[in-house]
Length: 302
Image (cartoon, rainbow, N blue to C red; front, side, top):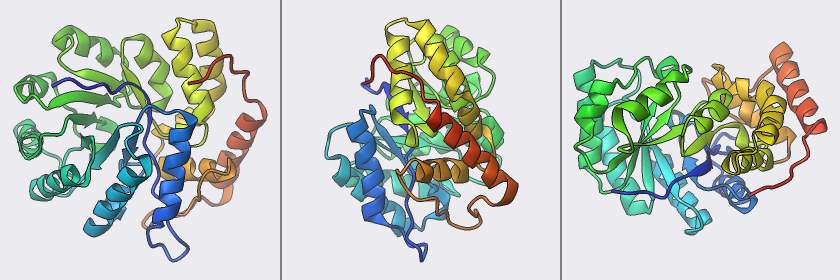
């Protein structure tokens, strides 16, 4: 199976009303704005989309609403993040029926699996759908790393086609290419190693801070594509204080606060998360406002 996925694909936020119900029109609004800004795809209900704070029926409504909002303009990739394999299989099937273009599959939540259990989980989801699948490797967040042996076992499944690589050690990009060649499409998945990943051959970047600064994210991608390292470094160095937020435990609150400051969404998050307060709120606010005031000149976007 081949896929056309490439470029900047933000992990979009899920918007909530003041009563903490899902605000589908507002969620569609932030999605449509990103599409109009020129992003190359959308991931809905990933970590930034607060997948595990949504009820089962809410997840399906959010996905259907996203498919409606995007209306075929770019690929819609849905997160699959469940407590067990049975739920993940059921959601994968429903996501295909809802019109998703692909799935980003996470390990089962809470339980830390053995390698055999991890492979079995991914295999079960892949065999339940014909959609192309991006595996999400994020050892710091989910306490399990998708080993090269696991990837060799999964290589027989034709619809497992992509890896979102969020390990902070950038050596893994080169090791993946050396081990698997073009078998898997690789995406950089951690904002503050995005440029390194792209230079090392990643086909794209699954991004959190693109929600607040899409034009700069796209300009970074464009600069890499035309081998303009000087421009890419200038954007990356300006962006880096914010990109570090993507690696923090409160990344969702920080990204949604940045969205709100930039007039692109609301910071409301569902418990157990709370909006940022006190010194941390002041710190992130100052970072976003400083970045907004010092935005770099963009020679090319989109």
